[in-house]
Image (tube, rainbow, N blue to C red; front, top):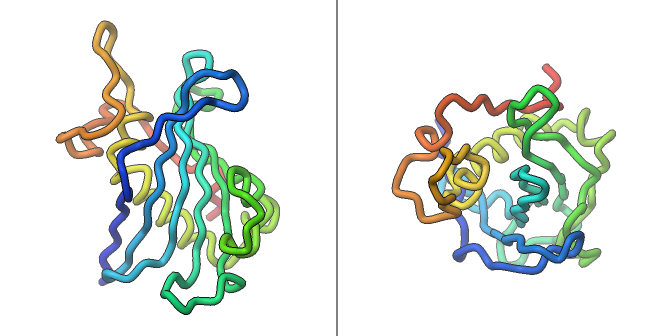
Length: 174
């Protein structure tokens, strides 16, 4: 059995939202499988109109020092509330939030991503990121009325940080 671990490299970085001028947070890190990097991610945490969303670019492929960036694939997602009030992740066109730097490899379209042979692996990596990275899990967790939101640094396991909230992959095809 393999071990999967998602980590953030640094504390979330406050930035100005390019859409509304408000504040967003940038979180970047990696996904390790059996202690080897298998993907990196850049996530942007937004709070627009009372909605907490995470837009994330996941770059899957080799990350060794001499790795060829053309072997990497970028899948992009949005995680946040959907029509029925649950939290879901939806696949977007790849490279939604990243630059056109060759470091990011090939940007996979939503259409191609939904049928890509790596999509089960991508969902597994995304589950790990959303559940294990405190800043992201905390951002998506409901906040009780009258209690300030904790964006990161929670000492509570992420599974306990989302009581009563069902998180699902809206685009997952079985």
